[in-house]
Image (tube, rainbow, N blue to C red; front, side, top):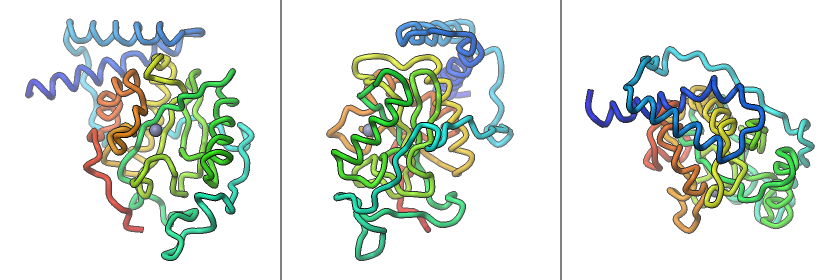
Length: 254
Ligand SMILES: [Zn+2]
């Protein structure tokens, strides 16, 4: 095994190792979660791996529990939105675009974001993001397909069969996942990393994705998803069997 492969495997084990421990936490702060994960990763690194991860093809990943749009009180899409007006056509390329088929030919890349804004609870944050995107950015709906709250709750955002508006120049064929927080300044919670990992593992299988990228890898004008979430991207990609970076991105076949 090459040095690189061995290093990557240890990173994977470190991330996977927090799953059972984090489930027992009731009030982990961001800082505690960060320390917990770091400690587990270091202990694996020092002692060497104690288990062999199964190849992705053998994994059975159930759809994670996802709070529906109705569950968090989403607004209906606005098809008269200023910057996403009407429906997609060759004459209206910025319009609301609904993909066809089962989406495996549509998506290649999951793009990870941070929300920057955080409200008093996760549902309120999800509603605030939607309001910001519809009322200030002029989009027809929330930009992202999924949100991952600080408590680890996962929310349905824009329908998965509709093009997002989350990454400039690369929305068609990329699925957007936002983690709540400003990760230039704070760190993700342990629950958030575990839930995000499960969600991305499931998306990678369901959509037959090939790549994972942070938003700033596509758009260098942004810090998104923040350095403290970017820190986890290699391990999240490894867990889901994805390559890290933008090189898999392409226009969908459908
Ligand atoms: Zn972003």
